[in-house]
Length: 103
Image (cartoon, rainbow, N blue to C red; front, side, top):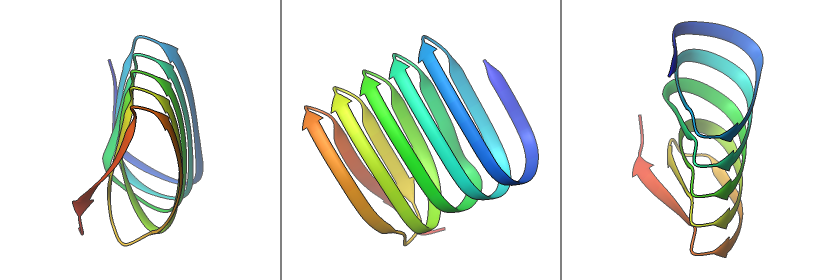
């Protein structure tokens, strides 16, 4: 498991495959996440403006997006999100996108 307590960046790019877990907090403008396999990405404490998540397999991602969230989900994975972002989604398989509320 990788834990990052206080991150402050303009752009964050995460590309994770296989089995793994990442937990990150802080702030960023752009967050780009690619998960394949059975990974778990938790950035519910990372306030981002624009977020893109591409999820394939059975992984899970929890994000916080204020302006936009682009979610592409294939397989049985789930993307959960906080914030009032404008949503663009493409879901295939039994994957799901779930709103968790505002922060």
